[in-house]
Image (cartoon, rainbow, N blue to C red; front, top):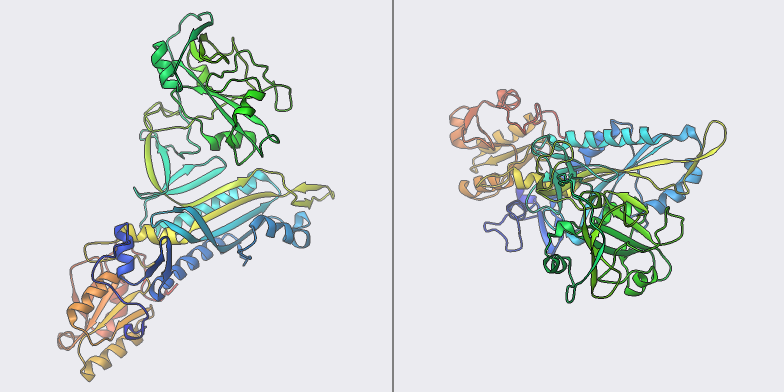
Length: 539
């Protein structure tokens, strides 16, 4: 490719709309250009980078037996599967299958390091007869993706999720958070992280006593008025499922210093779309808004029982003599203890973990790691309409798992980490071109030598044939960041050949044209450098 024919111009100054250093360099290098906030047009250089990312991910999944599909983007994947299954997935002989494709996703709020409002992702579905085997194949998919991401020098944090696992790229501009134990290394997403509370000192159980608490709208107000820490209070939080009057009212009771993790709660109940319960819905189960507790309520013993559906967090076991609502305007109760004074339908971990709380494995304080999710897998726990016939002819549900990897997220993560004061420093796995060939001078011997050198190279070449100064050409080469710069000039020819410089090194040396292919392979290695990535491999 000749730069004189390339669509897209480099910029000398950082664009005002670039919120991160990597995005600023990518725009300056003419990889992409903003169209409107969160939406970008990928220019030819950037399109080549995305093409390499697709090829890498495709090869990784094909190596696991994956097969590519192209699905309509205006229809949900679940609806598409529902249409495909009856004809193409009827018997146990049709399983397992690993199918994948590339799909645009919309994001509101904006997502990722570069705050996309739409982005391209790899989406894969695992179809199996056995849930454990499905999970194992999903893990293999993400491991294969992790190998590709690691080729570009990214340090990733594996993290557990509620229904699978994810790969977090740590970065302060990311949309996600993981909680990691610095002592044992365990990590989980903020939605899935667990923690332990320090054991309380044994103390005798007090009797319940009502206490007037006027003008105390919050837990902090109640605790201050009664003269206790918020850790000695029980907080009531109400949710509802479905439209008003048609779903369940869910009464959550949790220690007052903790917050409810709605993802954990929805996962426990097997529902999505929880909303805050209305005052009417709260009163309908016998509780009083602002002064509620399960004490004195009829609590259903099971999901299908009669009474209020109450979910207790494990933290209600970690103390004694709590202050809780009295289900009476202006009053709270002291000396409340579980399970002596109230019951719950479910007792589970539904609390939001945070930095500083204790690792459940080793007891060290957890630390927060912000970042962006580059890959994940999760199991579809719902038993849907997708059935297959087993060897006996019995219809059974297909075990479904999903995997996702971020194409543009991968490119952004590399751009944010592989750079210096001059520009981008692409690893060969994603570089738009393997070699940036700078031609200096209009003399015929220089032009002929450049043509001969291009013919010797089996990797992809970006040739700067413009009528510009050496300074402009070198600055653009550093900005675009291809792994190797070759310079052909009258001076280099007089010195014996072509000047060769790896993008990340300051050293330059003259190499004869005939020995150039071997010299490229023998370049000093770097952590992100792939052996043989420049010669004979344009993937």
